[in-house]
Structures are given as C-alpha cells and as structure tokens.
Length: 449
Image (cartoon, rainbow, N blue to C red; front, top):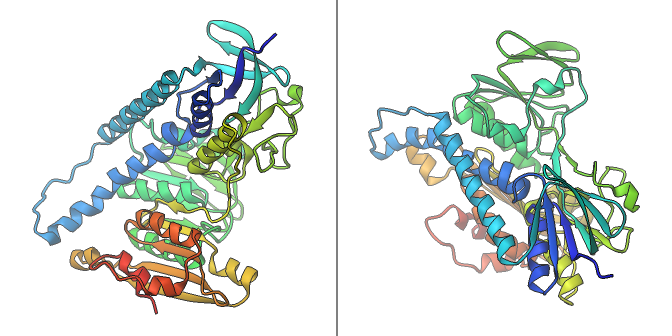
C-alpha cells in the first residue's frame, strides 16, 4: 500500500517550513507537525521579536542624541506593555503568513506532537486524540531550546522564551551567559532602564568572535553602566522578598528582581521516538547527519538546530532547501557551512564573517591585519564618545581577504554585502581599487592602508 505522505516533516520552524514548501512545489504529498506556533524559534521567540526589542530600546539613546541635532523632546516616558504587545502582535502576523504559505502549497498541517514509531510511521497526538500516519520519507526539524543549568532553584530564572511575555520590566536583572543572547538582552534591558549584571563562567564573552571586537563591546558596555562579573560559578538560586538571589562559589551572592539564563541551547530530540526508529545521536545529544542531512536511517533526514551544526536560522533554511532540491527536485547540492556571516545585536552591534586573526594565523601562518578605529559622524555631533572598529584579515601569500569583523552602528547591515566579497575570495588589492562612498562609515572598508 502507498504511504499517506511522500514526506512528513516534524517541526514547522524555518528549516522545516522551507523543506515542506519546496518539496510540495515539486509535487510531493507533504505533511508537517508543529505543537507550538508555526515559524519556529527565530520568528516566534527569537531573532525577530528580539530585533524589534533592540529597535525599541535604542530610542533611549536616540532621544538623548536628538537634542544635539536641534530637537526639543522634554518627555521621554517609556511604556513596556506597548512595546511588548506590538511585538507579540507582529509575531502573530508572521505566524499567520507561515501558515498561509503551507496552506497555499497544500501542505497538511497537524497541530500537535509527532513521534516516530518506526522509520516510516508517525504517531500524531493532539487534544482531539491520537492517530497514525505513514510517510515514504521523514524530515526532523525540531530545533533547539534554551538550556537551564542543573542547579538548586534554577527554575526560578527565566529564559529568552519568556522575556517577550514579561508583565512588567524588572528594576534589576542578572543575566547568566557570555554568548550573543546574553549580550543582546543586556543591551536591551539596559537601554530600557534596567540595572544589568552579566555573569559568565569564564573571563571571555563571545568567544567565537574576533578578540578586538568583544573587548571593545565590553569596554563600551561597561561605560554605559552594564556590570560584568567574570569567572563566576553559580551554585544555586533562592527566592527573596524582592526577587531572586543567585549564590556563587567563593563570593557574595547577587540579588536582583529577575534572573535570565542564557547559557546555551540544547537540541530538541526528546520524545521524538528516535530510539524506536533507530536514529543515532552525537555526543552532544544532537541528531547525527552527513553532508546531505541524512541520518543513519535511510528514510530519515534532519536539518537545523536539532543537528547542532551551525545554529543560525539562514543555515536551517538553506539545509531545508538543499534537502528538498536533492531528494524531490533531482537537483542535488549540499550546504557549505564555511564562511557564514553572523551578528550580535548588542549595543553597539557586532558582525563577522570568515576567519578571526587568531584562526587565520593558525591556519595560514603569515597574515596581514588592517584596522580602522574611528568615531562615527553621528556620535561626534551627538557628543557620544563611542568608537567603531573595523578589521580585515588578509592572507599574506594570496592577498585574499579571509575575514572581516566590525563593531559599530549598522555593522550587520554593512557586513551582509561585505560577506559576498569574502565568500568570493576577493583580494585586498580589489578592495583598494574600489572608490569610497562618502560620507559613510562603510567607506572605511576600502580606505584601510
């Protein structure tokens, strides 16, 4: 007997939706299951609503700077529920768009949980009961979730999932973590008037980024008033009359109204029936896949954060596209996971692509470093002593630009175009031959000597 579906996708996030839509476009009968809203972490409780909070929080500085540009703004009151509710409304709108996309491509959406029974059979559970369907091929795209450490009282803290639903802003917050989520929310909370303390187990934040950029971010953040407590090892969390108390090894406890855990993410592999289907996991409890996103079971693939290759939404989307093109479109290709641009929407933001200086020296040996350390024109007139830093890493033997790193206003917007040049292996000489676009911050990229 034929299967109910040619493809069944478990998880309707960015990667799963892309794979379902493209496979259906090739004529496949596709079903997809999602137990939360359609759109996944990025759209529902991640990148998109977080970026909107970044925009909202940055008005705090813009309104101050406006006075130097001639604007008289006596009232600078802020209302958290207005920002929160508008952001959530935008999330609902995007959720509707994703659902419409699936519907318009005749993808059958199941609202509830999906669990593998075997390599072709999926048990679907919802409030209306359970049923079983079969599929010729299965794609797992269940993403990842914020990690909460196993400490006494750790459940008293929240994660990035809950930030967007806070009833009111706290007066103070302790943020545990040194990665991009921790630094982004540190900037957001600080600009909204919250006293921020960021703690980290080591003395390095954003360890995968260029050292000069992360040092500059810490310097600027400290000047703004964000407190960093490094080499901090939490031992437990207690509730107090005013909020929470985080105890730590070898030092006094930290008190705050709110504790935010931002200590990493864990692939969502539990409860999927992977053992029943014989799907193997990696040592990091992610689904093990090859370059074509195929698991050790011939009929099952996996894409996105559940594979823990590169936890970025655009990567999941490309993996979903490659899967559908290869398996259903007879257009085989694989995703190149090298030279992927990334950004930290901190205040100011960081953007990076390619090799850091340290990585380039380890890989290539002799490299040349070009840097521009300057104060943006807007900051000069605003009287804001905040400097940007652009850095290019060049292979000395070939003159190819192998890395580009930036911290400053609009750095992610600028770096997206710059990433094309790095990916295309353009040389420093070709950068130098390009005429500057003046007056811009980006012109510094072609003026470094």
